[in-house]
Amino acid sequence: MHKQRIGVVCIDCKTEDLTEATEFWSAMLGKDGEIGESGKYATFDDHTGMPKVLLQAVDHEPRVHLDFETDDKEAECERLKALGATEVARIRSWIVMEAPTGHRFCLVGPQGDDWPGDAKEFG
Image 1 (cartoon, rainbow, N blue to C red):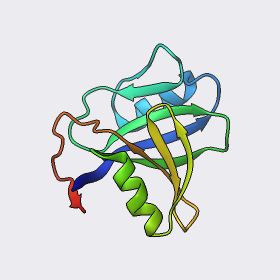
Image 2: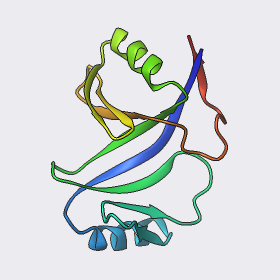
Image 3: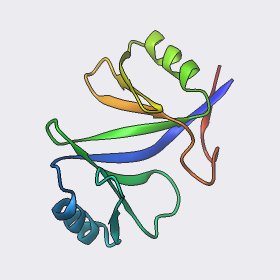
């Protein structure tokens, strides 16, 4: 048995510098954004509940993707492959997947301090 839920909405920004994107999304969300040390990610303060919002600097075309929190990435990966998803890559500690519809998403470990919250149980 394992659990899973949407943990993060990732806004992929085709840029090497997230400053302008962080300014825009901070104003749009009404929350102060902060770019992390690596310069690759920006998070927003005052966020409560799930999912979180994250900006990510990428080298592909801009898009939005979902990160699904799970307490067993391997089991969830296998479950989703059985449903028709494909594993695209393993980057750091997450698994990049693609739905049969062509949409990409990631499997990540628990992100929220309220885990498991409203996570659905599988298996």
